Image 1: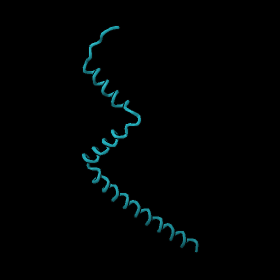
Image 2: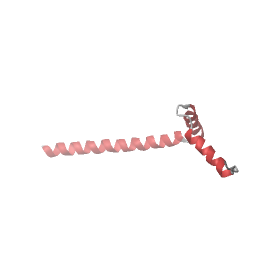
Image 3: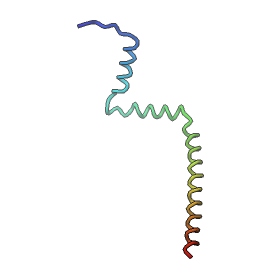
Length: 77
């Protein structure tokens, strides 16, 4: 058996492998990661911008469908 020196690259590879392999039933790690993401990001500001944008799109679609409905109704008479 050949002895091999442990380089920084090998250590990083082992750490990455251990991080991705993990235990299949370890639900605590993803939950902690999600909590860290929520605590450290501006997700609420992005969400409020998206909600405002979705409200405008929804209102536009409703107005457009109303106009199309009345135009088709007027055309049928």
